[in-house]
Image 1 (tube, rainbow, N blue to C red):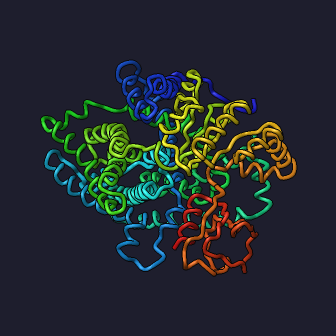
Image 2: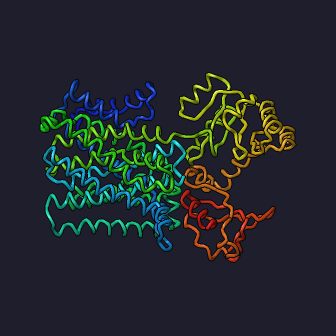
Image 3: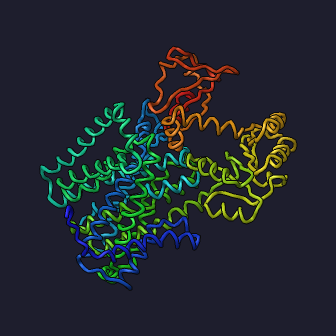
Length: 629
């Protein structure tokens, strides 16, 4: 035999755990609870199965715990990957610090938010220590100050707030809280375990390893041979990009493990932070694959095992103080995030600031992981650990709900794209727009099709595109684009005529199937998309420039082509080469009046020009600031 494989392992426990992981999203979908994080249900079902139905033996538990630890490592890696390093770097203050620039800087406000929350957390822990014994007040306060980027990010993305000023403030504050919490956890856990010792310098050495990998990565990614090999081996059986990422994760995890078990959390997080700096163009495809591995297999095992090993009998250690302890802990977890959020009052108003504080109060993986590490170190008791698991479940359920109640989505107001007709093309367009944070509303007449689109989680309204009252109900604005996709040229023309004649609406886009139809639409002043020409252009790109075409199509949610007007006086009359454009922004065309120019270093920019810029959302936002100052 070339390979000696034992078939004596019992796969039944793994089957049970993965059955829970599979049934969880199904149950949430069937009962219409899509907004409830699936990990909450995984913890609950893991607890129910483990305490009332099945008990695993020690050998099976050892295997499941290893897989759960792998899920935890993957979760920390993905947490680091969710942090936009470009946004943090772009938020570094570049001018003289005043009260106005301080309040408008997401990074500085995020750091201030964390420090205030940490002080409040420490004070709250001192009060809690009077209700029960807390062996390390400082470590306990660090657990309380955690937050969850993994909860905040999807909530803001679903609302289309991801790239707004408010959304960026929240994301940056959450990212700072994650980074600072993990750093403080690592050093505190190491000191609690072994005291102040020389090995603490090894933790700092881990950052040196991070820097070395970052420098090497910058050099390697520009080598043509490696880029060609990466492209050739990124699909099918090779999956070289995924293998490379897993390899990097394990390098950091193994180095961290040699320093100390408590450092694994930081190592996995840093590997994600490192990849976040490089995965721009490949981000969409690679993230889909990594999410599939993580959330499809390893991560659910981690949360199911958290539920399985949750021990409610541990609450007996509190005796009569349990109710007071849980109540004060619950209130404290919200207050220590809401009070610092008053920093945002001047920018967004009291209501929105408080709503942001509630969303920042959501906690998930980090609070569970930090509590588990504390339990292992002996500074967290089983009862306190069980309390934190309960609080993670409670805050994840309550925080996003209260946030949406206090700060409801005003979908019908403001910028949106209205799509008349619920064809498959309309659904695909809506999904693509959603991925880049743009609001879309689909209007569908057929009740059955309307329900199908609604079940997909898209924003849809049942109505007739020829009904005048519809456009009043949806509060159609002159700057809203209307995409007419009714399934037939005849209906497209009718709806377009209605919009042009009755509302004098100008931003109308529809599809044409022939030159005759295209001419009719042009006579109406409607932008017509020739489906035949688009198809021919797509095939031409696949033949002549396949790599470029795939890069653009597969990474559209990370790279956007935008038109940015020049409104600032300081930029007027400056040459392109003197303007420090963001490294992920490319100035493609300058439009001045009816003329368009391909820019060069010596090209002058004038106030009133429209810049056609291609790049990441962060880079485009940076460009807007530069040309509007």
